[in-house]
Image 1: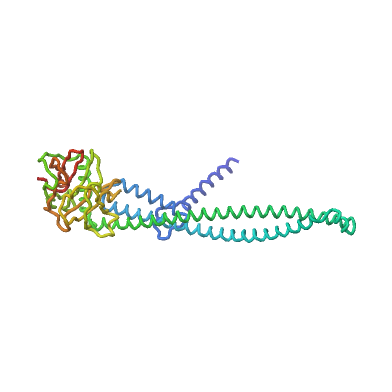
Image 2: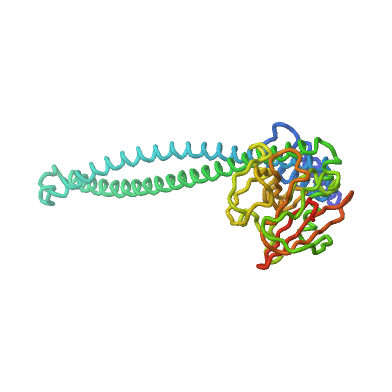
Length: 398
């Protein structure tokens, strides 16, 4: 008996080992062009974990591109999942539509029959018991007629019950169809959002490849620039008081790439506004002004846009060129969850080195610097009396 049990247990283990590889979803299954619907959710989990693992690795161009590729694949899988859900719901709605049509015909027929029964009962009810007795040929005929009336009454009760049941089924089927229709609309919105997200992910990947030209050195320079900006934004760097300034006074010029190498991907002004040591949206402070974007409209989702509606003058001369907006590139390897903390600007387009920078408001001017990997980030800070600070990065203060 023990041997039989042992053999049975070993057989179970052997069978389990054979089954598991068949039902499990492997990463190789998720890399196929046509993934089985039953494995879509598993693949989403597997690739999401892979994205998380990549995020924990050292930030390099190759790992970032791999993250983009995996995010794109996850989004495509979610699109497939949503599309399949919509298709399934539409099939179920068609079935419900057929059922509702059938129930509607059934209810109509039952109502006709019930009306006929009511007429018949009304007619029979107008005949007195004496008339039934006289009209009967014999006692057997009398019993038959009485039994017939009872059968009619019982059938009427059944007919009424069936009618009520069908009407309840009709209401339930109609509610189910409306619920599934609502699910379809919800999944269509989800699908639209996923397609928009997919397009943005593809643009972000292309933008990274365009600006880095698939060069690791340029990618690391972008990281160094972002890290230096973040450090300065949150109190890093050493500062020296220079003088008091008024709004419109020149406070320096945009640094050339030779001066800002290692801390900047190119000459531009990174402008920030802080209120009581908290980063603010510069759009709330800079006055409304016509601007030009130094990137195409297809990259608005990556580098952002501006919507100035304050009362402070801009720190550069017209025409104003935008290189990057506030809160752009959220969750990117450079800026993290918060995104870009300022607005990157210059006068016009092309080489911005040497362009004049002006204070946007009266205050005390400080010159600062922060040591980067291969150089220094030079900047100016103007402290204002109302708790407002304005920062001007990648410039030579004077």
